[in-house]
Length: 249
Image (tube, rainbow, N blue to C red):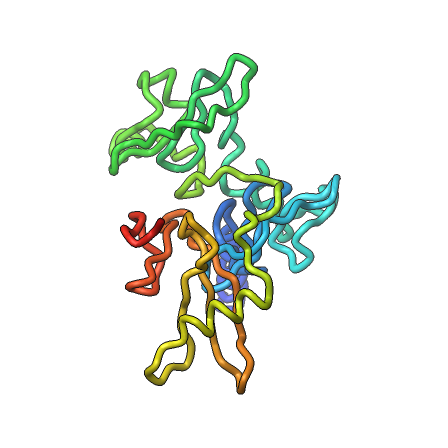
């Protein structure tokens, strides 16, 4: 009996690990942020960094170390992270009416052709979830937690914040290796330090920054991007913040 319980516990732990791989979040398995089924960024310090990469045709963003895998390779352990087989939900970002849920608490309108209109993203109240199936029942996408629990509904999307995917390269504000070293050198503090963060002075949006660490006379300079939940880098606090800093041009 004890052996059976131990086996069940191990299996359950494995299942919970796989379920933890979520669309539009940095995954624990491979440190990758899947924007959608075919586009991703690498993750460092639990935040997406660098260029957005497009998967080859016929492959999907997965929790595998290979990142992009053929659809035929998807299984209970190798997930199509942003597909209907993943925990983000099959009805997430799908226009089944005039609206579509794009995160657990956000929604957008749908065009007459059935595509998402992402120029305006609307938010539910703090205690509400976006549930597409509830529209025909409650007359609203946004459902209070108590009502959703009573009716047996759950959010249509598991991702907490909607971030539109793009298959284009990162902005031209991405510095070269030489520029990164120059930025770190200019921002080097006078006090002792192990490492520090520096503003990307070529980025007027203030959404990117650099991790700087000196190694002898050289710099280890890593290009970083703030997470969507805290999109702006504040040079005064050396951290990503919700509100755009006044120092940002």
